[in-house]
Length: 127
Image (cartoon, rainbow, N blue to C red; front, side, top):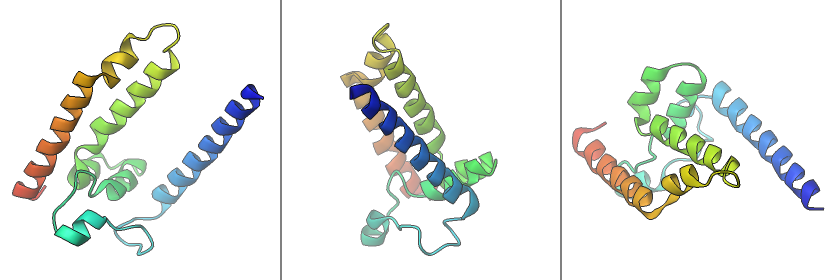
């Protein structure tokens, strides 16, 4: 049963990812009202670290790297980090060093620091 659950989870995840990719590839969040808006921005007027990520994802899926950077420059490094953590998790049983390095307390503090600095800088300079 465990093998079946893993396969089912993987299949559902792939279908969900494909649906998200299809939606964000074909619909621009800047021009479509049914995409969710940032509650932090609505309440405070300030950009959160993720503000612009939906538009950046749309730009990325349409090959517009400049648009990605202009909407949310932190998205590309975040996607690389997520991919590395996923790769580290995939090889975790054979070699745990990559996964530990990317998910350990030092990496978490550095990531938190980058997010805080990014949030402050983007709101000061309007990025």
